[in-house]
Length: 127
Image 1: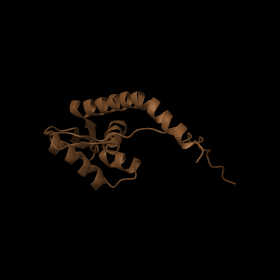
Image 2: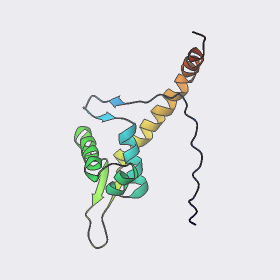
Image 3: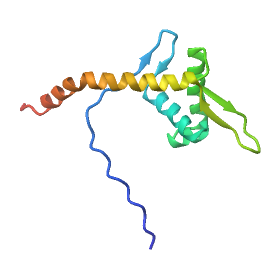
């Protein structure tokens, strides 16, 4: 008999805000692109990051290229594959984008906490 590892129980759902930034340069940065950049930083690979997010390599590459094109600076530095393998890492611009997005997200969540709590209470009012 094979014993499967148990999964940790999922955290209960909670009210939260989701932010997408529409920058004047045309770049659109939201939770998906930021998660991709974080996965690239963690895995050192665009293809591994895509797999971790259940996204094709092509889609992951298109999202990175979209950011590069609109921001006018690379967010990911890549090394060609070969015998030693390729790789990818965030550039200083990519690291800054993740850090600033996550800071903005945390500040917005903290600011919205009272309003989200009020919405939760309103859902439980009698009809």
